[in-house]
Image (tube, rainbow, N blue to C red; front, side, top):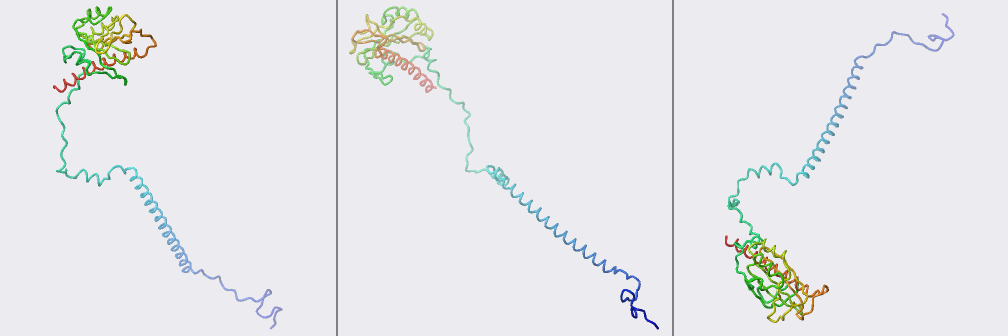
Length: 290
């Protein structure tokens, strides 16, 4: 028996064993490993899905909390559904009286004093120097004047000078009431002429020519006779009123003479106020009488 160079049992590149057929795969093991991998993936999916669901629920709850908070803020001035239901179904309080409303109509407003002063059928209060110019002084604009003489006459022209007498007569003057006020060295006479209508009084005012005669007496010397004096004319309702004012010393009234002019304006304002008050008094009496 001979041996080759490589020795017994060895091939040219080194030892070699016997060569058998190829091995068969372990299918059972492979199936088991695949099943374990699928189970692991299912577990991961379940865990991930649960976390996602938890996050979604948390977001919904947070949104609901925010929405509920906003709703309360917007409706904080309105009762809730529960409180509204309680109010609606609560029984009435027997101790609480029911409101009552009078069926009587409200009283009518008092009449306009100017309407009374324009209508001799309604302007019926006593009228003379004492009722129209009461008291012993007048105060206008903070200036006080002492009251002098007073005079009333049905012959209106008798208390005038110049063309005013004819104007009063032609317009139907019923009575002329005069009063004088004095302050310092000036005096003013105001004359109120009474007519049957506001139209007649307005006509006398528009046609007036100088003027009312000054009324001396009761401590006031004769004034505004033969000298320049300040005069005015106006009307209210069925009354026309005229003033004449000047110095008791007999000097002329000039354009720069503020004292004499102011006395005439104060006398005119006082006459207006007294006539208005006459209308107010009768308006109030008519309401009280009703």
